[in-house]
Amino acid sequence: MEHRSIKFIDKLRQEMKEELLVQLAKSILYEQALVKIDGEFVGAVASIPQNKNSQDLNYNEIFIRDNVPVMIYLLLEGRFEIVRHFLNTCLRLQSDHFQTRGIFPTSFVEVEGKLIADYGQRAIGRVCSVDASLWWVILAYIYVQRSGDRQWAITSEVQIGIQKFLNLILHPSFRDAPTLFVPDGAFMIDRVLDVWGNPLEIQALLYGALLSAVGLIQMDLDDKGCTEKQAKEDLRDPENALIGQQIFRKSYAIAWIKKLRSYMLKHYWVNSKIVQTIRRRPTEQYGDRVTNEYNIQTETIPHWLQEWLGDKGGYLIGNVRTGRPDFRFFTLGNCLSATFDLISSTQQRSLFHLMYQNRADLFAQMPLRICHPPLQNEDWRKKTGFDRKNLPWCYHNAGHWPCLFWFFVMATLRHKQRQSSVDNLAIDLLLQDNYEILSKRLPREHWAEYFDGPNGVWVGQQARLYQTWTIVSFLLTHHFLKVNPADVNIMDLPSLKDIKNA
Image (tube, rainbow, N blue to C red):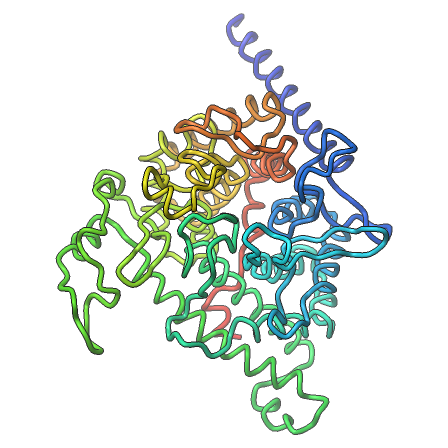
């Protein structure tokens, strides 16, 4: 009896400690991170400056990418007006310049009453963040689904913004592949790390963005009672020009989505069996009926892959390029692919098995490693341009980012709710253990941006403290694990089946 009382008291103390930590994180978010524009909260700065006189590079700006977890959390909190103001402000800043028409800014900031947006002209390497534009469309769809604000979705401003976005994405090019070709540094990995071309994270976001765009267009067409046949008959009327664009680009986007998914599953997904098949394919083939389209040589397949995959593991590789596949494991792209159902339920199980099997590498002392393994030695020198921030086991070169953990939580819990065959006990223990790591370490390390070293023990050499998405990642993790696991469906997007029926 006495033993039970001690356990009950310990549990109560733990719950009180957790609640205090959650309240601390929420107070930092609401009282220090969120900023106002036009008298209303519009988003959060990247990190909270500890010295009021310090500008600290551009961390005082509002980044679309960094505000993804912020907006998701605000939706869970029912703060719909902030999310709507954020989306509208980004929409106001959508570029109308000839070469960049349709893109959304990487970040923006108010200076002397004027909004200053960065479309890549101020970034290191002068690279535009392609993921910002893709995330806006996804967030717009999630906002409408969670808030029920369909009236916002069918406004001409929103629908025209979606058309400008699709016009930017769905255009003729010199390539037949459905993937989006981008330069190095165009997404969360925003410095040179040999990810140019068709990196996984961009393709996963492209898939989600196209699904979201189709869903938002369909809302407007349904509201207008517009059928495809009627729209084609009325296209000569100038007032129906937008409807014509919506019909055309919706059908084009649906075809692109189907082609993209087939392409990703064919060329990006690997497991032990597939790797063995790749190793035995002939090279130097030409023509339509070839088995080795990208002329992959056996020597490009790394030796670590065999043990990494094991018998049951599978994942989407980082990049597909002629003769140079990138077999590195990128955490965010794989987690998003599971959440958006780009990969099947069976493949999701293989992915989670692989991540559990390699938990010592990926989770270690601070979840979650952004990519594995790092570029080292001559690879690091040549492929990063001697980037001191991206030293091996640092920053984006296999550093540890606590802001990624909630994506893994969402992907696994979402799968668990839909599939009873997943190994629940192993995943539950992994989630709980790493939640406790975050609870203990993040406040002590002042909510650092990232962590360095093979085990993620050291605070990142150039890491900013009180990083907003580190704080909000903890809040989201706590919400999904401790408050309401059912809310992991917040990022459910239209399925291919739903789109076909529509």
